[in-house]
Length: 167
Image 1: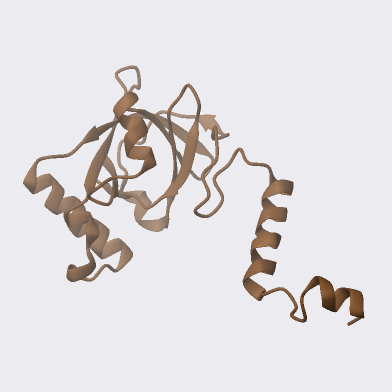
Image 2: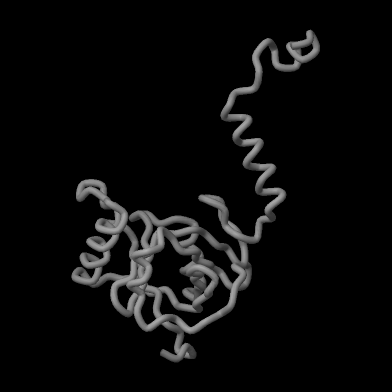
């Protein structure tokens, strides 16, 4: 290391975490920001719009889906989701997150599973029995211990077909 390099780093090379952050920023810059990446939100999802499936149990084979909220200014994220028969559910912690705030403005969402985009409407679930079934499904799919099952007390949303979506 030269004297100038040593002076620039004040005798220490950059921390590995700083290097990882720099690499992540560079990767995002080259990949574009329209799609969500890991825990970093994106914009409008790309893909073919298709009618929602009659049965969502195939989600058992998928770790996550991509959820697009706020149609006027799309905001998309990677989400855990469960399918219970004809219904698909997403959830978040009890006090909500940024995307739950956006749902207050408009419940219209788009969900991408593989390359297919499904246009749906988010409905908050209050029914105790339905919430219990969703909490149990999340626990089974994502191996949540009963004491760590945040879905039980969280905000749960069923993503229903829009009125214009044929079944």
